[in-house]
Image (cartoon, rainbow, N blue to C red; front, side, top):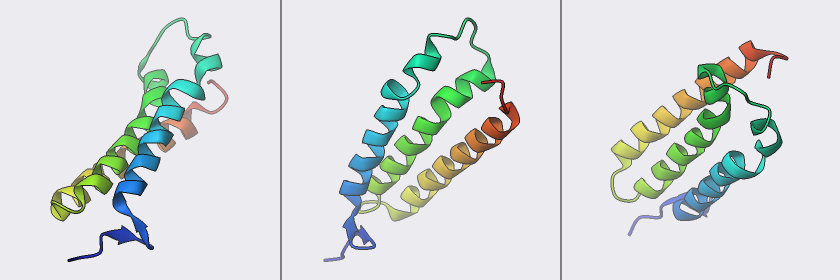
Length: 97
């Protein structure tokens, strides 16, 4: 039997932590900023939802690692791409948001 872990931490535990982080970044952290939004354009949408989406995709990849490692790597890569897009939009937004 193979040992599915990252630095000794089991992948399912990593997946749960990623899902908890996604929930925090969706519901808890941006609550005060969400009330200020009058209109929702793409940069505001991306700043609000791409960060949690990246954590969800990384968590999904952690759960998929045992069954289908090749698909898990692709899902994790998509999560990393979403996170890079979030960082790029965050850096470009500057003090606007």
